Length: 85
Image 1: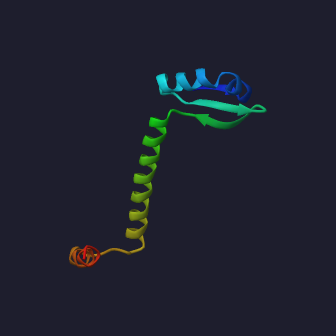
Image 2: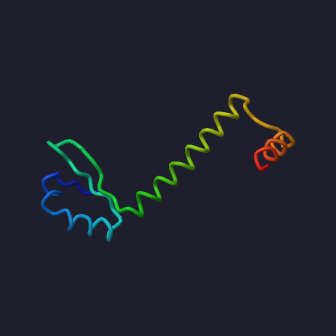
Image 3: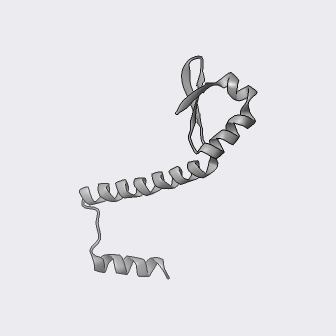
């Protein structure tokens, strides 16, 4: 992954956007020599957000299991029947 100065982003925004869309590789934007932001294409961003949501759901499920907050199959069917009314 390459890095660019924030001033480069200001001067060449269109070129950088086209490159990110074409290459599907993020660009690290630095400000005063420190990481400030990542420039990524919209498709990659949306894909990564959906992956994060799935992983968060898995983590919530694992926590619930560890805490004993679970339903039997019959309890689940009854609860779903209530929710679907």
